[in-house]
Length: 365
Image 1: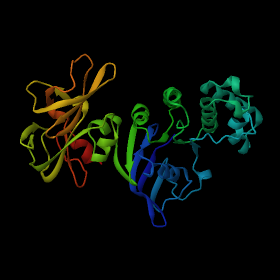
Image 2: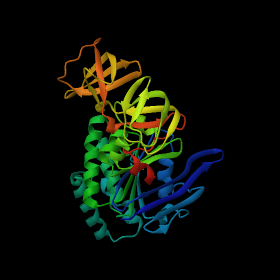
Image 3: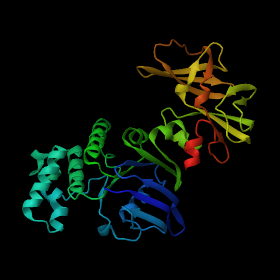
Image 4: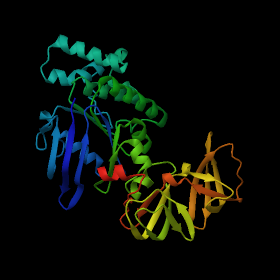
């Protein structure tokens, strides 16, 4: 398997820019997620790595070799599509073996490799069945088998579980991650589902409007978002945002929110004007003497936790608290912010300000 390097890659279709000067590295053996909303450029990026689209500018390296302008057949990359892309007139065995037969491999070797892959995927009993009668999950296993049997340097997967129902999709995502770990493969996986990305990925690139907003581990993406978009896109419920006009100085650990002083991580830069304080719902605590006060508008019971919607003078907030904490709709409660978890943003640019919380992450990328 191999490292993949994307360096200043741009893709333009006439006047439309699908991907703008993107750079990141997929380490050898990573399960790497390209995450973002529809139309953000993630699938175009995947197709450029695979050779199905050629970049307008920039460089793509696979295993140390530049492959930017090479055709797909010269890249040693396997592609798994969302809609399976199986040959309906062939049975399972012939679908899986097709890449090997096309390469002219000996028949005995083909049968051996197909049997090995079928064993890995648990579909030995399906080899002689037509693909048309298979369930969605089994058809996706066949599509994976056809990719795996080639033993390529890297796998590209374009929302391969998107056509499955929610319950089976979760099951297949666990199977797919376990399969990746057994094979030690390098995998680049496109999804718009942030839960899927957080659950499966070693690293995540978050894209929006053709731009890479952030690149990092799931923990870094969640705890230290680099932009308002990432903070809002990742998390359910997403991060709370409190707008305020004011200034923060480098070295400061307090922000003034409409007359209320809120503790924040020590700042590494100064900023003024329209600012935003961001805090995750689980980092708000109910307290009689809380920094903020507000009225409980709604509660959502989730088993071990509950989500409270609280209207404060500074804005509406979501708080995730223990389900056994008794809270009544209409009551007024205090809220404390866990200061070490707060991120400050510039409203106009959307970028996160550097602080003791995120300095290492932001300086890296």
